[in-house]
Image (tube, rainbow, N blue to C red):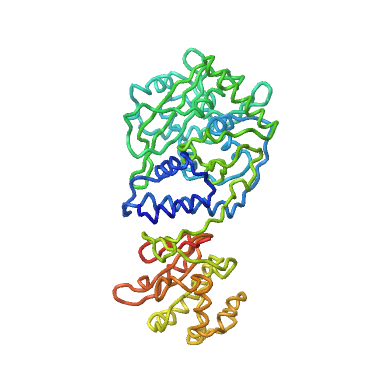
Length: 504
């Protein structure tokens, strides 16, 4: 990590509103660990570059929050209990908004539907419906996962009868005696002596096998305990918490390890679940609870699926409201750009644009600007030679490639085709020099020019992609970089396409 990159990280952190305390340093350290350690074709600063990307992602999420509200019901689910145990703030966010699933949750849902537990049960363990029967008939050989630490579960399964399954989302929820609790275990079995037990599966990405004793999280344990004490019929006597550890190989997911914890009825478990249940009831009734910022856990915050939507991790707030206000995290602070960053290149493809004018031509991801300094005939010629193909890209992808009057005239394009808004109208009739002066004023404030020729395009509220002169050069020839016209999701950042950062 270069000193300037560290300064950039500190600059972004200040914009996000974090208090400068011991939590912050540990949080950044933990955020590093959320990025995969092994990634091909990355330099030694890969981790810190991705932290920069993560911080920019959070800034954009804050600035462009379009959150769909969720109707908060009058019941408490086993999932609520797990979320509240993990963090009351994450519970409040989950109850308040309909949010996109993170990749880990999507993978977990996909793996859940495979019903791995059924690979270890007897031949009569189906519930009679076609989907469960088909799943059971497609057993995979996962016996290699059995070891001394988890064999109790698999021995029990072989002697038990399946009575309920929700691994595919088809199970009906169970309700508590007073109707205040609802729960859907992944499985319920009846063992050989007639006792019912629940099985709850969790899927966790792991890149290597661990010899360290498994760490079973309290929120997952409480989810199982809620089934034991909350489901009146069938009466659950005990439960198993199962962690499937997976990795990737040749773009496929494979199960690497299985960790199991048996959970029994105990006075301590009962007291813990009652305490959590009553705390949630109080929160639902009062709509506001205290938040002790000293309770923030850097590792939990860095790994939380609601991190991008949470303002409490900054240490600024002392109360948690329900519903969670959508503007709580939107505390983007105006922070002066450090002088050391007021240069055109800070290393590793990160650059800054001095942005003095805010609501300008830049604020449209579908506008692509050709920008050049001086007489660059070879680059103009390649644009003219490919203009009809560029037009095809414009029509297919809904983008607009904006050039100056000289190229428009040479390419025999009518002025009307470039009058989609006031700026395009003005620039299409500008002289070449005035066109570039306008672009320089609005994007660079007339300083720190990146390249003699390049193409600019907005990537998000804080970054611009630019393609420099080198992106036009392929095998000794000058060619047009058509990748700049693709949808943003299809653009791969490489040595030819670089990020600029817009300073605030």
